[in-house]
Each structure stands twice: as C-alpha cells, then as structure tokens.
Image (cartoon, rainbow, N blue to C red):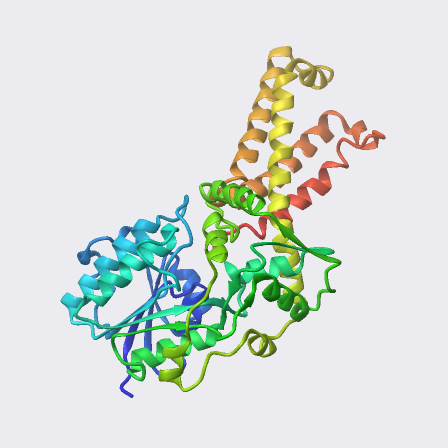
Amino acid sequence: MKQQRVLVLGGYGLIGQSIVRHLLDAGHSVVGLGRNAAHGRRQEPRCDWIAADISRMTSPQDWSVALEGVDAVVNASGALQTGLRDDLGAVQNKSVVSLIEACETAGIKTFVQISAPGAAMEASTEFLRTKAVADSRLRDSALGWVILKPGLVISPNAYGGTALLRMLAAFPMILPVVHGSAKVATVDIDEVSASVVMAVEGTIPAATEMDIMEAAPGSLKDVALAFRSWMGVPPPVAVVELPGWVGSLVGKSADLLGYLGWRSPLRSTALDVIEDGVVGSPAEYLKHVGREPKPLAETLRKLPSTVQERWFAQLYLAMPVAVATLSLFWLASGMIALANLGRAAEHLTAVGMGNTSAAAVVAGGALVDIALGVGALFQAHARKALVGMALVTLAYLAVGTVLSPELWADPLGPYVKTVPAAVFAVIASRFTGSR
C-alpha cells in the first residue's frame, strides 16, 4: 500500500489520538490538527502538528495551508454540546462543510468522517443534528467518503463516556443510574481506529457508511456493573434507578457548567443520547471486516485494570466537589469580610494601623478572595485561581505572623487551619488544567 499523508482533525482527542497512532504504525505520514499543537507533540512526537481552532475555520480558504500535500482527511473532531469552549454549529457543521468544499477543490481523494449512531436532521439533540448536516454534505460531495458511526467507545484513556462509566463504577456503596434500562452498544477503540486505516487504504470502499458496535448491547446498568467488576470495585449494596427528572436536573446543572468551560459528561445531551439508546447494526462492519465487533466483556478483558483506574475514577468524582467547595469557601470569606468590615478591621487597628487604612486592607483582601472564588468556577482560569488561593493564604499567614504571631497558639487555630486549605487548593489545581 502506497504511503499516504493523512490530516487528522482532533488528533489528540480520545478517538483521534488512537487513529493517529494506528495510521503511523501502518506506515502513513500523519498531520494532526488541534487547538494545542504542543500538547499533541508531547502525546505523539512522530506526527506533525498544526495548531488551529476548527470552530474558526468556516470558509474553504481557511483550510488551504492544512491541506497542502495531504492525500486523505480523517475528521475525528467534535464536541458534545455548545458551551463556553465549544460551538457545535461551527465545530461540527460549518467547519466540516467548508473542509469538504476545500478538499474537493484541492483534489483530496479520501475523506473519513467519524459520525455517531442516530445522526439525523430530525434528531432531538444539536449534537446529532450537526453531525447529520456534515454527513449529508459529505455524501453529496465528489470525494471518496466513508462515514463511520461508532457506539460508546471503550478506551484505555478516560474521557467523555469512558470517564462517566469509570465514575459511575467507583461510586461508593451504591450504583446510581438514570435511564438504566437504555441499550448501550459499545466498541473497542482499536476497532474504530483499524476501520479508519482500512478506509484510508481502500480496504473499506468509498461510499460506505457503517455502524461500529457490538451486536448484542447491554443496558446502561449492565455496562456500568461490568465496569465496576472490571475495575475491582466491590459490588454495590444497591443499584439505585433514579427518576428521569433527577437526570434532567443533573443535566441542566452540568449544562450551566458548560457555559463556564467545564465539559462534564453528565450534560443533558449525553443523557438524552443515552435515553434514546446507543444502538445500530454491525452488518456493514461484518461485510467489510469479516467479523462483528467484540462484545464489551471481550473489550474489557484486553484492557489492563490497575490501581490507576480506581484512583482516576475516585478523583473524577471528587474533583468537582473540591473545586466547588474551595470556590464557595473563598466567596463566603470575602463576602463575610465585606459585610463585617468594621469588625474585621479591628484586628488591624489593634496592632496600630489607622482605621481608614485597616478598612482599605480588609476590603482589598475581601475582593481578592471573591475574585479567586469566582475565577475557580471558570475552567479556563480554575488552575491559576486555585494556585492563587494557596499563594494568598501564604501571604496572609506571613503578614499575620508579623502583626499577630500569638495567633499561631490560639486554641481555635485561625492560622493553623488555613494550611490544609492551601494544600487542598494546590492538589485541586492539578486536576483542572485544559485537555
């Protein structure tokens, strides 16, 4: 097979990263495109990387540089739901349509689209509707196209649905599920990536559209229990089937976090997709590959389940609680100080500071506390805000030690108690960086 130069959109994402490695291992030259090229190079140095925000590449001319010397394009980009970091209309519709037009102009031979089962113009979610628009434009194009629709992708990496399953599996004592009876067909990520390589090499012929998923899907409850067993977590005392309105409330809350930049796998789109079921037919896969995709049990058997899995799952549960707790703590601290400015300033006037200066210092410190509390709520600023909390705490302790060193021996521990909070903030900061 002649070596091809392949452009992979979303090259360091959950699916894209695996596709890039499979293409490289098959002897192809790969260009990865994503927002953070440096991150891509760290993950896969064998690949060439282009830094670009796909959501802003909405005209064919925007793609000219990325397509130079390229023989095939694989679109593994996408987002679950519109939020502060994502615009589905741009990422999954306008940008992909403009890319298809650019490929036609550039004479690109092959275009492989990673779509989703259930993608249709009349689908209930923007995620599936925007996928359907891009799929439709691709079918009408002059390109040699292949559209792949994987089920719930099971991967050694934890992101999106795979992170959600790990989180559910690690829930202490019980297993809470919404839409627990919904059918969820899974697929090994290696089978998705191998299919992409086959499409690029022509083994899967052009104008092929196929689902890639196990033939006999289990329910969401079955899948979560399988993950719990695989991770070595003790069986739950009870499986708690939560009513739909609870799921809706959780989803809407997660949607609000999406507008702060957090990509929670519990957003309403994910819950709606699960409620409708993740199902399809592996008939086309069987036709071209010669076998059906592996069932979940076989997929899990080939993945290592180690202490890292359990640590991740437990921390994934704890991280939003930690960030929310720290944010509320600093917001409350600042607001209480502002509401009791006179009393708070007394601590400084008692050591000789003037009333006006003391009030100004307290007000300034309170505003810093509030700013840090607000900053922690925004994903893009959370890490800096959390580190800032630790540094400001150390500054408070340093100034306090100079002005009132006796408080170190105070039985209520106003100084001592802040040290664990600073350490807590530093630890939380390590889990809030951008992907």
